[in-house]
Length: 145
Image 1: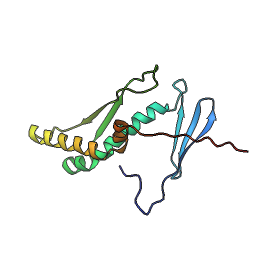
Image 2: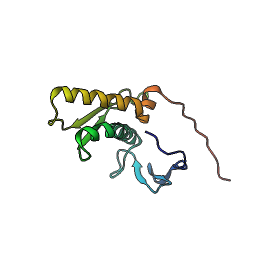
Image 3: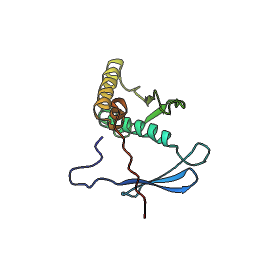
Image 4: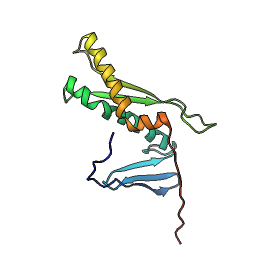
């Protein structure tokens, strides 16, 4: 999913430390999310945010074909799971489940729509495509003087 149009400046993203193993994620558009360890109530862990980003991207990538066929007010829930491999600190397998009410469609129409949804997600879900292909990550540490 494209995050910006050519005329829109890029959204800045950052986290600020708010306590021991607690951060607030922020965007230049005014969004906030609370981040922390599993032992902290009311926060997402970084791994949970990764999974939620994947599920949201799949949902947004499939929104057009689903709304065109099911109507603008269709309901969808995308569950995502996958345990961490703590020895290697990776998620070796993330599994998504998209739950849709397709009862208004016959079996052939359901299959055609599901094929279209899978193609849409595979083609335009940036998060999923990035996870599948891998990405280079670099870290620069700047010391305030």
